Image (cartoon, rainbow, N blue to C red; front, side, top):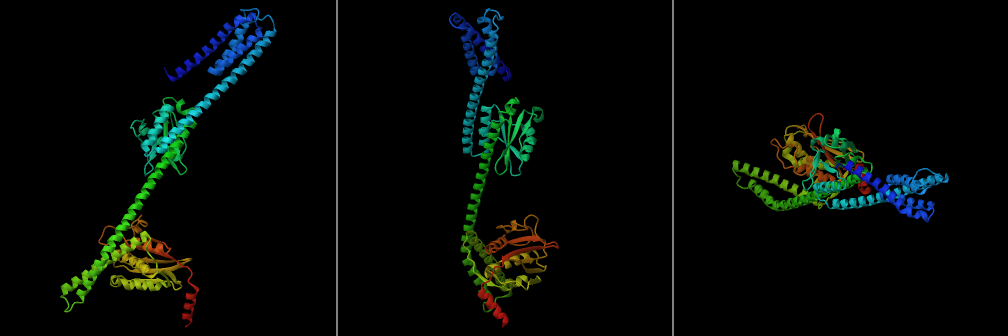
Length: 515
């Protein structure tokens, strides 16, 4: 028997019980006719109508009211056993009896419906609470799908499917943990995708969806839409009925909260993992740097002693000693970079800031690079009105050296320019080259540890120079960026705050100018 046939059978039985109750009341009141006034028998029929309304609702109560008037007329109003009325006053009694019976029946039926509605709401609240408690303990999306599928299948006889986005925001169905669940197949994907993108629920008839009447609900969290809950059932009443919609929306809200909680748990775990990885990497860099610094210093010293040996070494051995010294110095510079990077990452780097002109640092950087810049023409364009800046000269020299070495590495024959201009509260310093430029999309990632702009070619390096530059510049309160020049080549620009020099230093500079 179908659900509709079962409901019709239940209603028919309720009407039958209502009529039977009226007949029993008439039979029970017949012996009382000789001892009580017929008007008092009306009260028995009104009581019967009230009981029918209490147990079977308003429809059977209406039938009981009509049947009570008819039975009272037939069995208790003279002439008996006929519907004829000898006294016209009984017509008023019939009308009053019918009106009172209808009012009592409707009131009792409404009270019954409200009681049943309150009981349903209480049961729904209890069930939602139990589901919310289970969802709060769920650790995976599969567990969430299992809980919501079990709840809707057991409580509403609705097949639920949970669709969540991947990293590219493509929705995929999440299989319940038990592996048992209803999969609507590819036909559901266009519908749930439309709901996910619009954030609005969508009702689908069987001919629209291709599988069953369904209601697709977005899982809307305070931040964004987290997915789609698809509820389908054999009959449209199970998902489209007005009284079912608030419950389905409440379930979707609870699922959205659970899915968002899982998202932030993943974010927190990933952040913790990254922090631990960064801490381990910093500790490793620091340990390796310390262990390598001493033997490299000895190696450089030995190479210098070979170059200064008396009598002088043969030409071949002298060239070998020079090459050994150059490579040892290069490796020593790499170790110093590693050590500086480790210090900046753990926050142990100390800046020795002093107010000084930028020109001195530029000159020191060019002198330090020396022979490595011999093949590249250098153009220096520093604005004449640059104010003195407060910075650590050694570290800022390291920034310029790293940027210049980077330019020489990728543009060994081209001209290199150093420019500096004041823009409001900042001084911008740029190093420009005419090399191949930066690959598209890596302008920001270039400043990460061990990242290189171009992995191909003969250019050497491990990707530390720009990372150290960013750490030093940001420690001074500035910023650094890389970009391609319209005319070709790359431009790396870092900024330093202008600040305000102490008054004493300003007066000394003014006095020196007067002299």
